[in-house]
Structures are given as structure tokens and as C-alpha cells.
Length: 112
Image: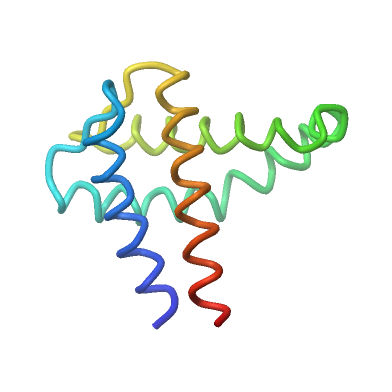
């Protein structure tokens, strides 16, 4: 049940980001649901490898480099799914920041 809740919240966040951030485009709610699924899979499979490989720079930047990794994961998901487009890296980084805030809020809701 928690997984389904996170999936729906992430899909809604992607649609919300598309309305807020210019250059971040999601064609439909179905594309957002698919993008949330692919983003979850990319974060589960690729992100841990990148985190380990970039651990020294993450330590030097006091963890701020993780935002760059999150932006890259978002950009990767956008490159896989037609109808989900991100214009450039800075748009992906801004979208990743918003997704991080939504994820923090979701985590606090699920724990309580």
C-alpha cells in the first residue's frame, strides 16, 4: 500500500512540476504514471551504483552532489519515456529539488 501511495504521489509531483517549471514537459497523466514507475526503477537500479562511484565528491560537497545524481536520474527517465521531456540539465536539477521536497513530505506522512 505504501508503494502505491508513493507511486501516485510521485506521478502527481511530476505533473505539478510540469506546470511550475518551464522546459519540464509531461504530456498526460498516464505518461506521468509511467514516468514515476520508470523513475522508481532507475532510482532502485542505477542510482546506488552512481552513489558509490561518486562517493568522494559527495563527501567533499557534504552531500550536495546527491542533488546532481537525482537530476541525472530524472533526466535518464525522461530520455527513456516518450512524452516526458526535460529541456536541459538545470531544469532537471530544479525538478529534482522539487521531487526531493515531495519525497521528504511523503516520508513524513508514511512514518506517522
